[in-house]
Length: 279
Ligand code: SAM
Image (tube, rainbow, N blue to C red; front, side, top):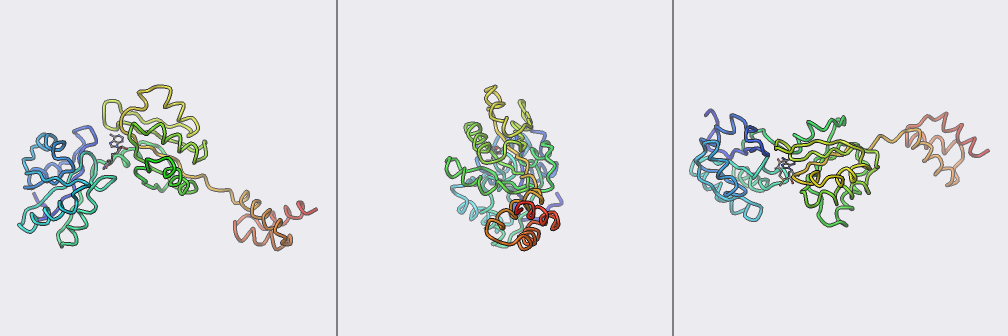
């Protein structure tokens, strides 16, 4: 292996399909003496499948600080460590970030290997045309907190990406339908890379009915992707601001000049509109 030693290697593992692991990831897993795993019982058979005989240490969300010290101890002895989670990329809605920070702070190299990530796999098949996306991960489980979190996202022009578990999928889609315009596109990417993989796109307003029409559609692991807020038309926004300014007592010329400056809508058109409204 041409990799540098000692280092902490961050190694993505398959979401489901065992073929979804890079050649380099397999080489790293075969050569490191230690693997820090979110769930050692879960990862042990997977690691054996790839011919990895490393010793395992547990690194989950409840022991990350202690695990970091163990990892740093191994690195100090010149032994490299690979970090894995149950599926996908460590530190993406999964433990790993704190451990990585401690290892970096201790002066050791952290080497990321690119690989499976449910959000990116889903995005690649979603067909959403936004140039930008915002990865949100899991929304809060409690309805009130979830609604509040969503209210902060409604105007963003980016595709939004959420993770969701099967027991909350119906509630979460219903919450999205309350918070966002029903005409926005929702893509439900389910069981990616697995036997019952499906990627379904529909209007957000139709998503709940689609989910409820077949209980199988609610099973498995989900990535939800929502198209971004449509751009607010300059003209409509200009008219809205013009109305407010006129109602506030500004003159036709002041109101149209300010509405133009604020929204970029055409100054002349705003002026003419203001004259008509005031006539
Ligand atoms: N670190 C992982 C990654 O890189 O994607 C994410 C782990 S997070 C604890 C688990 C969530 O990821 C699931 O609840 C689901 O939202 C999403 N997920 C994981 N595997 C998936 C799959 N095969 N299909 C769809 N979503 C999946």
